[in-house]
Length: 166
Image 1 (cartoon, helix red, strand yellow):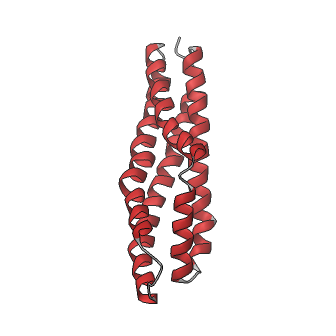
Image 2 (cartoon, rainbow, N blue to C red):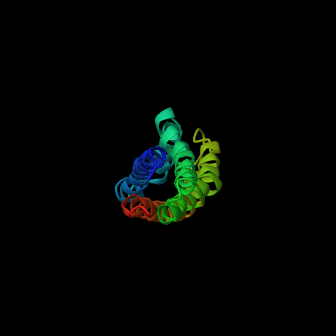
């Protein structure tokens, strides 16, 4: 395996585990806690969290992983290590479509719609409607991207552990 291939596979695994760990941890810690709060608290918390996540550290890991995995796949194929290259390509495609794509096409529009809700002057029914339009669809998409993130980690780890072709 070339040095560039090994470095990008390793860096891709770090990015994958950072993003997938965040999503996985969120699903099993924050979401159960938020399920038990009233609608006003839920909407306020999610609006705040959705704004806070848009920071350079998250965005570099989230978007950079797409690039790093693509480079890993290309350089591994170029090195002639096709068995490993197919595994890292599977990781790249799974992450790009299943994590990044689901987030951009599904979770982000839901976040934007919730952010457009103006709490000032809204009654309990408004908060309940905002939550109902957001929580179920967002959680389903989050479960999909979290599961596919784990699958991408498995593919990338398999790439790293696959013996180099002779």
